[in-house]
Amino acid sequence: MMELTRKGEYAIRGIVYLAGKPLDKVCLLSDIAAAVDVPPTFLAKIFQQFSKIGLVKSFRGTGGGFMLGREPENITLLEVVEAVEGPIMPNRCVAAPTDCERSGFCNVHPVWRRVQGEVRSVLGGVTLKELSAAK
Amino acid sequence: MMELTRKGEYAIRGIVYLAGKPLDKVCLLSDIAAAVDVPPTFLAKIFQQFSKIGLVKSFRGTGGGFMLGREPENITLLEVVEAVEGPIMPNRCVAAPTDCERSGFCNVHPVWRRVQGEVRSVLGGVTLKELSAAK
DNA sequence: CCAAAAAAGACTTTATATATCTTTTTATGA
DNA sequence: TCATAAAAAGATATATAAAGTCTTTTTTGG
Image 1 (tube, each protein chain N blue to C red):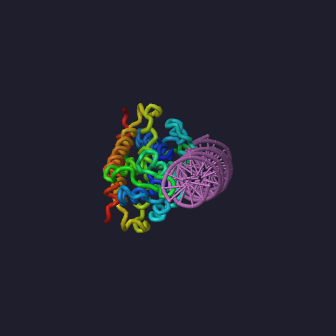
Image 2: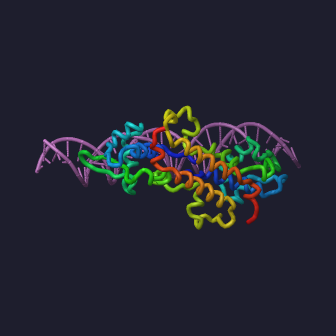
Image 3: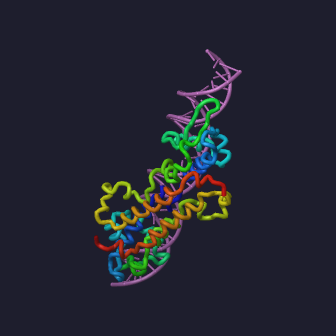
């Protein structure tokens, strides 16, 4: 359970690659896709989502491409993952407690809250700067 | 992301219900399903899985049904979830590092390991006894 | 105006989740 | 031993989501 989708995996690869480049360097989508081994059309969709929320900046037309939207030390893995996968949500009852008619008596609910908190905490503590650093 | 499936949700409901009954009480599948609001045929499949690994005991024929396989204080939520959902696996690269040709240079890998550890730790710290206790 | 590149939207394919139905096996007790 | 009750097993169906592709449009620089 709890598996990251390909989309999430690809998203991370793509943006970590960008994070390893100078902030002002414009990278072609096709180059990024080739470098991180992701289908270019799929990565395009992902970067469109990133672009809308400012995680990356995009430039159209000749000489266009993508660059990171902010300094890599100010972008967490949590932001990246939630941008494409949606909120970390171990169980739907955690999303809308009021919608869950069991929340009044269900002892499992707080456990899922804790899981959610721990996962968010781990992912929120890692920045793109760390991820892009050479090993 | 990381959402529990219906199957997992149903599995928990069903076995927590059993955990609230005396250990020697045999419960009809149809009664359990009705009590926890789960399609009986689906719950049957789930309990078959539980039965194979001893989480519940099953009895066929007249007077048959299900009971918990062990004391509820000795069954963790982690066991229940992994029994029906498979191992907690935030990313497939965590499953088989040797299969992942990126593991040599990928800095994200250890992060998923930590996520996996935290989730397992939370779920492993909760027993069916606690979950079945009245609020 | 032309070419390059991303944005947007429609569409296809595949896989997984969510069941349901039928048949078989096992056990009880009349 | 026969009828009945109940779970086991296996096949099948449907719905949803994931994964990927294709086409058209918009933007920009030269």
